[in-house]
Image (cartoon, rainbow over all chains, first blue to last red):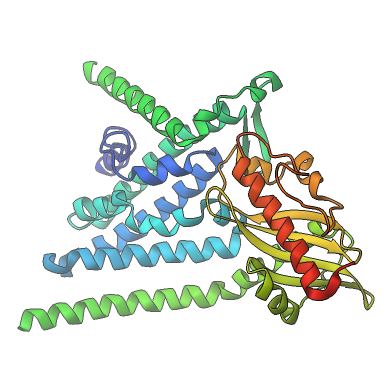
Length: 206
Length: 189
């Protein structure tokens, strides 16, 4: 149990795929213009991660190392397609917003990376912890980025049809639009890395 | 040699299982996806042509689509709106080129040739800039009541929105195409 928790938390903070390993960035930079998008893509990626890691971990003893990559990719791609079709059927609005980024989860190196480094070597139970942790870490970064970018860039925060935060109209009119454009993604992300490194360094000192 | 055969068999097995899973998901979601696509279109037509309150008022006309698309290639579908057997107008699904990719919209035109409304159904424009424009009433209002004889062009009779010039252009092009298509299918007045 202790190890389960350790594997879970590691993926969220110390070894966050995005702020620490800097992998799987493209989707985060592109999609984090709205917080709502971040939540949905985060859930989709976490789903794919958890099921891919379970399957790979279950069969890890029978997967020869010479052909492991094609097998990993087939497994990941299948789960992504399941998510893709399900989303099209039940959440078409969201599917239209996320568009190409759902099928592109297949080539998210974060997922292949965790499968290769973790699930292909460790027992199922810890693989689930690793997948959940990595997925939550990914979602957390997406949500923070989306929160900052949407709020600063448009002056309001809208999620699932509800206005969560509305800044005064004076700010909305002059909102720094750069935050919802590409440079804003890099800026926000850079500050997030600084913050994450600072907090981790503080923790180390203690 | 034996190893290669073993690997091939294994990969075959994995791919087989994956296909099975995908076939199952596809079959389970197929009908719903079709339904969603249809509903999305109907809803767009209802916004663009407010008189078409009921779904059964809206009929797809593949023959008119063919005719219109031959002259105006960006026209994708033509719907006829008829209430109790009387044709009230047409709705055109068109896709013009925007900033981030195609901008799909539905334009409603009544029998007199006047635009009744416009609804953007799908786009990849920049959130906060072009994306806002696609649902900005004060911008979309400009297109209502336009007729085929008017230019419907940015800089002439349509004002672009600064920061979203390309999206403004895409929308104007879409409405222009719908008007041209309307003339093409014989609705000119």
